[in-house]
Length: 391
Image (cartoon, one colour):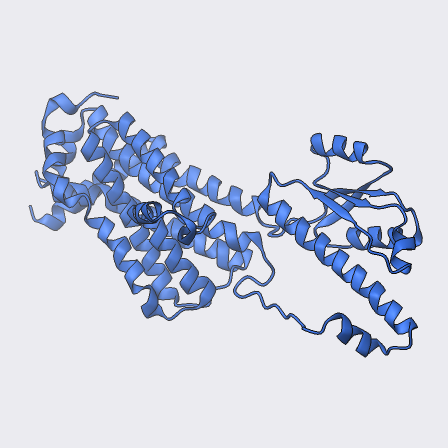
């Protein structure tokens, strides 16, 4: 039997197992689809809006009411409560009913028109960094716009033209251009990490489970025999059907992000598709490496689960790698996801030249070689009965 025929024979056997055991199809198709669609629906809106805030208006004048209306008009904030004292606001904050309290001082209007500085204080819930940042930005911008408008009006009343008054208020004009994600859309930021995370988890665990099942059920010698005793043929025939499935899922992820959510695609599509395929193959190889090393499905799934979750931590998407300790930065390189995300951001978001991402592509490919030194051990696992029947 030729090598190719041996691989095809193992593939046919694997497809029969896939059709006969619902767990295989659930783990490799059903659950990944549910997880992917869940995150797309969860973050589809992209930007948090209308977060409830309370305003404590101690002044209760036309000026303070105008400030309240301006805060309510921001995209992020919705003035849900008008309070008379801070104690009510603190109670609502502790109960989780509001995300911020804006305290407008007594005599605001009197102090403003009397050329005295008034102090408006905002208390923002910092337990959620995302909401904290967005609310702080919108409330700060509102107060700056409000105070600048008042100052310009006062200067105009003194006979200064509106343009001159504006120039006096802003002698240095600051112009900001947000690149690559101008709307600060959290779908653009979070989905490119959440969706590949789901893919890698199910790719890794499915690989461990399918090989671990052969050992647990003592069917490993039949698997090896289907490959004519060639462990490399048995290995390829086992993983290739799932390579196809998870590569299709990775392309489905691209469609979700670029066509449904609207994540920008500015770079080389071929480079991104190549990274999708190598990303799947890399995590399959890591799965084979883990189950071969431990020789036990339950332990392999535990190790694989821990390893896959750590990939998110070390990806640099939530906390930048450059700010981590050098040892932690070095540890991030043992996860293909780190290179995949660098490539994705360069190609999809920044529109970098394809040549700039070749290194990341090669680093991902290196992980595919991981099982090769252990294939002799994998053959021993399939041949020695002492490794069979264990959970």
